[in-house]
Amino acid sequence: MKYPFIAILLLFSILATACSTTIPLQTNLSDQTLLNAENKNIKADFVLNSEIPDGKIQQVYYKKNGKQSGSNEFDYKSETAFKQMWSSYFDNKFNDFSDDEMKITATLKDLYLEQQSSSSVGAQLFTGNNKSNVEAVGVVNVEVVYEGETYQDEFKVSSSEYQETQSTEYGTFSKENPMEQRSTLLQNTLNRSIIQFDNFIRQVLAANK
Image (tube, rainbow, N blue to C red):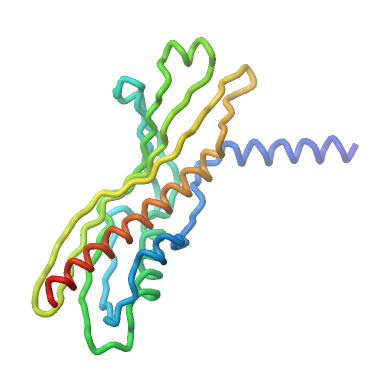
């Protein structure tokens, strides 16, 4: 009798995972970020703010014709991800012992997900198959004070990936694990915001040569 009971427990475990609304947190700096961002002999006196608190993050869905077809919310630690990744960048690429100091304020203004279908509604109804593009979008505002001058910028960054789902009488199945894909895309987007900021810092330093 214990085997059917174990099988039932495993089934409930699988269903609970499939129905999860929590996006896993990943906060690793990518190889591209570490390679592209230059080491600086400058001390970063930085403040990190987030207008998007830990909690809900929105995903908006669009039809093939570009019209919005709906939205959903997931649990995600947006503020934690932003602050951990940017802090790691400053720790890795700036020098805490330098006498040359730069004051930096970075604010996460927005972070959300979009999913654009590339299959028509008719095709989806006929085949049950839907191909789409999933994208994570972030907006970051930065202010830098260096050598008595103040520099400001705001940039929008994104990361996207293909997704395919198949609807059957037994449920809807995804080619990629949806939650893992969202997690990776959000991490990639925050990495790109760091690269964008690092390029901005290069311009600030070039202006002060």
